[in-house]
Image (cartoon, rainbow, N blue to C red; front, side, top):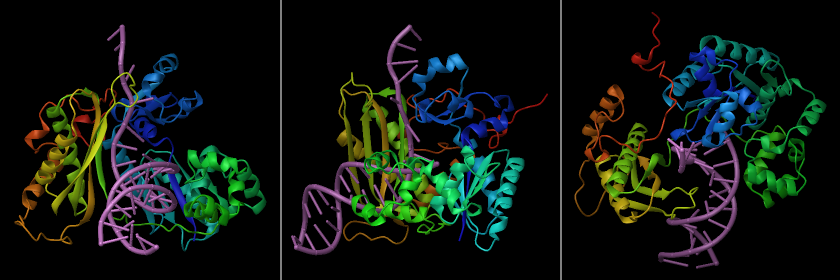
Length: 422
DNA sequence: CTATAACTCTCAA
DNA sequence: CTAACGTTGAGAGTTATAG
């Protein structure tokens, strides 16, 4: 078995450029929700030393100096571009795992290994021409190695023209290559593990690959042992073609500015809950508990800090927005304390089960919920936009809604946003 | 003491 | 002018609790 990992280059930045070619060659960043942090950087911005996750306000001076352009996250656009990219790539293999918005694994079973590099080139060319996005391709006998090969393709460390196939390289070549890559680049090795591994003298990918797997299992975890085996070419991770239903569903946001009162928090919490419940119904599940949390801004040490969460169990599992909202607002009232500047709130739907496979109630009445009403709401909101039909508690003006000061048009999903040529 | 629940930590995009 | 720092989900391992 071999895998290809296809990953978009600076995906969000590339989406913005696709519809605004003037941005080509310019330093661009895309910001997280609320225009808070940098989540995508063009090559020009990376060259300036801007780190992933950097708060935007800290970069204002540098940005002005170098003319860095910032865009608010336009997920409607990115999701649509992602779908197009995935559809094109799906034609290259009967087995595809969509791993995230900008990357997918393809199973290469049954194809001739000698053809892999050519296939990779065709994928790149095809996605570029049909969708307008640049991608890189990594190919190897395990998923972990395919991720690493993709990294090499992106950094031009091995392979050529954005495609790297470890299968085309000799053991000696791989040895020397792995000796030059930091262990932190390996899938599953994050900041903490990098630190701890360094303590054992494990610094490069090669060090990790050649380390004692049993010792790593004892000292760290079974996960790291699997990673080591994968680096040696022993496949431990399978392709997951159909995504399993979520076990929890979360919706949370930071506010554009801090809010103080219970009614405002109620608006926010019920808005987030409506969104979570939509997702819940979409996957055909019901929830047995709702968690609500609120918190002040942990970065602002001048203000008094408070954060609290509560889990509200439901007597009967449901996907009814009305009942879920009632539970969430009940919980919110319990944890709310006046006198704090709240920066963020959220809800989590927990103990999810497929609808129709849940425990009935022994005492009390089993009300059927409102499946028909929910269906109408979901359809109306899908057709005319989120929040077209909503509960009154969500409020009308929503002044706390997140900041998006640098939003590009939804070029591919809103007629009004289509650029006009006169 | 064991089994499970609850919680913490880490990682990823 | 000032203040301003994301969201969602999973799994493993550890600790608390119930019986």
